[in-house]
Each structure stands twice: as structure tokens, then as C-alpha cells.
Image (cartoon, rainbow, N blue to C red; front, side):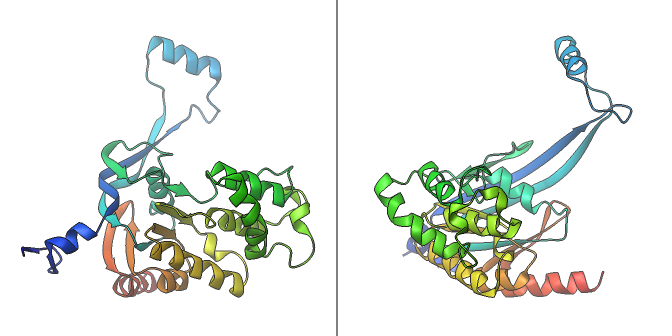
Length: 271
């Protein structure tokens, strides 16, 4: 049996390494936003077309380097917290992993299609909540028979009917918290290779947060990988065994959740 020394001083055997199946590999990823402007006015379509035809560069283009050389590997069965102060690049990184933003340099490799909460389970304001649940489940690839079984469970899990039959009302009558809870409930009803959650566990009452955190643990234990972006460190502490701390688009720390949160809290308390 061959032993391999890992960079974090943890010795692992070759079979143990083979059992750790990578689901997301982020290799020196850079994400750059380009903000176009001109004399404080919105860029007109005619002016933009002229520049495209003439291949002239647009004036007053400001670049925002949101993610700077981020590298890490996520494995099947992990729940990973992403923390950092506002503007640190957490949500941008999730969108890049989901394939919604291109990387300027580097690369991101994923196992299967990552599901970003609120995108795969899009909600239509003019349709009732129940109908949105059905469409969301079908969009995630569930067969119709399974959808019919899941719809009542999803509505009950979301808690939107606690104060009336909101499932039969159009989504435009929902509060932002109700909509977020329903989005989470739809997305979490399916097993995912990679599930990306951005702040969804911060919505709802204490009972819903506990149900949500338990569901994240179930998804992780069923061989999926979960990324959780949250400013509520208690949710990260309760659901994630590993945490990545981003600051100014760079990885400040990556390790066991207890150690990373302790360093982050010391950093934020000292600011």
C-alpha cells in the first residue's frame, strides 16, 4: 500500500484518495466585470453597434476584478461554506461555478451541471406557487409521476401555507422571504451533483432554518456537494465541515469550518 503525503500534512493512502471524487475543480480562476459608460449617460444601441462594426474600443470602460486567482478542489460528500465581507466575490464565484459567468483566466471544471439555487428553480410571478413548484421540478428533470408526489411535500416544507392557502395564489402576492423559501424547497427536492446556495438559509423563521440545514446535510450525505454562501455564520457552522474565506476576490483561508470562522470573526471584530 502506497502512502502519499498531502500538502496539508495529512497522510492518506492511495485507496482513500481514489475514494475522494472531485466534483468541482477551480484552477487559478479570474472573473472580471467590464462596466461601460460614457459621460454619465447610458450607452446607446446605435453607438454600440457603430463601435462593433468599426472594432473600436468603447470609451470609459471600467474593469472590476471580482475574483482573483482562486484555486481549490471540492469533493463529493462535502458541504463547503463561502464567507467574506460584502463585495468579497462570494456570489460571483458561485455564478462562475454554475457556468453563468465566464472566467477571464484559469478554468473551472465540474462534475455534472451545478444547480444555482433560484436559477434552475425560476419562479413566474403571474403563476400560483403550486404551479411554479410543478414547473420547477420538471425543469430540473424530474419525471411527471415523481413531480406529482413531490409537489405537496415541497409546499409543506416551504411553509408558505402556514397563514392561508398561498400555494394557490400568484407568486406576486408573496413576500421576498416566502419566494426564497419556495425556491430553496424546490431546488432541495432533487439530488444534485453540485448544489450552490446563496443566502437562502437566512430566510424564514427558526423552524424553517433548521429544516433547511437538515436538508443540506442530507444532500451532502447522499454523495452530493453543497456550497453555501451566508452571512449567518451559525448556518455555516451547523451545516459545513469545510469553509473557504474570500476577501477582495482572493482566498484568505480554506480549512475546517471552526478554524476558518474563528479567524474570520477575529478579522471582522478587529476592523
